[in-house]
Amino acid sequence: MVLKELSPALRSFNLSFNKIKVLENFDCLTNLRELHIAHNKIGKIKGLNKMTHLKSLNLDHNKITKIEGIKYLRKLEILSLVGNRI
Image (cartoon, rainbow, N blue to C red; front, side, top):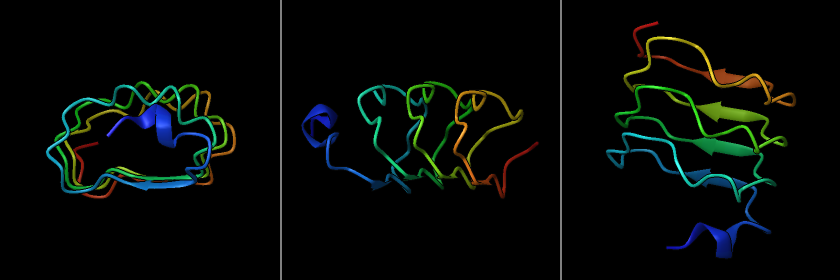
């Protein structure tokens, strides 16, 4: 799947349970409002700077140890990091 093809209309995206290790290629998802990436293997929150409309980010049960990489997510209302070692 090519994310660029979905990006204009995509508002919610669930990538949970996919063994994802790195957040990359999310630059084109600028209209996304909800992103669920729970139960993966992500170690750092990064690569989301252009997702300025994001309101909800679920990163439960990953390998995150530090809250970072959300500075530009100004509309973020919900950040869930349950099950991480923060």
